[in-house]
Image (tube, rainbow, N blue to C red; front, side, top):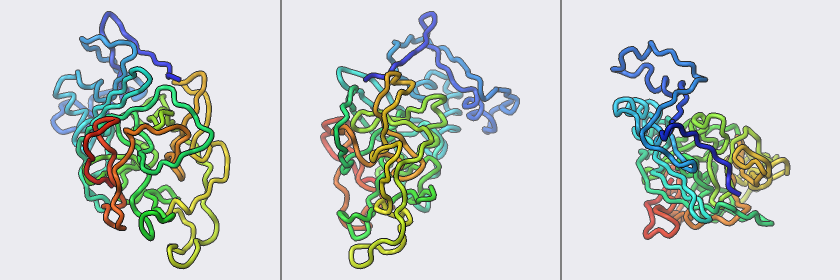
Length: 350
């Protein structure tokens, strides 16, 4: 089912509307901006900017698309203030053709990031070349499929969603796969406040609730699309997984110790509002007739680790190193880039 969309136009010009608070944040306190502190903008207000180019009603713009028509000096100020240490602004487009939705991006976030490299992550953010594809009308299957060698999905700003790591106790194939976020919600492996970090090839990606992205969405809770085409929402919900009680098995092949959330196997699905893939069916602003959708939660599994539909091949990842510790800082090989039928693999990811 396609979501309902609306785009306002007037007099043949496209009006770009910005949260005044975001514009003020971009200008206040920056060196060389005379009178910046004299700005008096209501953070709840909006600023309309008119451009010369008319836009079709079905067009879809990201933050970077919206600010691109601003004067160069203002654009640079906003970009540097909002994106922070990444020192670049994201570029993502979402289009619909035939039976598919296409998401093309350079993988750069449209919000401030943590500082990379850092003590837990030795990699710097750099632009990528992504071309993801998802079905417009995904079909829900009767049983779930483990994510395995697939990315979970892609956010509306073009940043990949990938909650898994490449770190295992006992090597690949072990059930004891380490988590990037603790049971108390603390990030490891150099994660920033948006629960994201960087692969060796410079690819920024989300492991958990993308707080920076959510802050840019206004009233919308749609944060992205899973590899099978179902939408992903943030609602503040908890998942239906809970920490197991007691201690892990002892002996060879087990890390021992108490179930504390270090490993995905420390959790058990206990049933509840969300299914084992962190999914549910409900009406949303984009799907007023209702749809199955996934939810990013504040506790494990954060993003879904399985699919209720069929994942598209554009989300399949390259093979990870098999030796424990071969991948840097708990990261694994990167998503294939360039489209559903890529010609070559990218460098390993984290």
